[in-house]
Length: 336
Image (cartoon, rainbow, N blue to C red; front, side, top):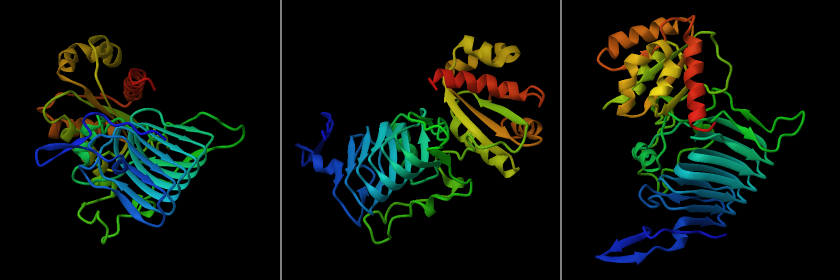
């Protein structure tokens, strides 16, 4: 298998540049060990994992692409990947993955906690189960930025089966109660990763926990959109905390850029006052669900975000249309 490295993949040592060793970017033929890479060791390079058995593998860094081949009974964490994560000929894998593209081929029995910017694809794979990415370590937010990934663009439950079998389901969703730590344990405190401060609780996750394609508990949803500003991401996180504390459920999120014609199509009668705000950067939108969610979100907007430009569904009779208009646009924009 080939492995390519850019001209950037050189390290300075005492003022001199040294070519890196390709072995630093591979894990091959390992068994019954805890291995991986600490933050700062990959810095956006490609990485290869192959022929590993019963290993705990942790990649606490951002990378260009990662391939995982011929691995059996492994627990794997992969930090943000700018391009694709491709697993081939793997069996009994439990993993936590953040990437632009996720694909499997000829794999059996995998449980994946996923953040994927595009539609995940499985091919000739069976027994695949998915849940939403839930993870934190101190450098993770920066690694998402370095990999060019938004924490709000996560299509973890929108799986495309390239080779469906009539009458069978090759994939399903893990129970909502599924905890990352029950699948991919924290590194052994005696390992080289003991200095990495990790949390796997949903409330600490860098990526917001969404319900995804699971059945909604209520017929009432609300669209809440933040327009670009200095604190857009923290404001979105604060809204999620406020709403979930009141018992409402986050269904989906998106971060996308909009043009004036997009605003008119999505927001319709409210478009005129919003057009000027899209020039400042991407918008962050959320669908929240639960009985009474529209009035609750309007109250939160007035009480917590009165000095911030937002759009909130006006009433529950039109809120479903708001949600459909925005997320249909966003999916088309992102090629989903």
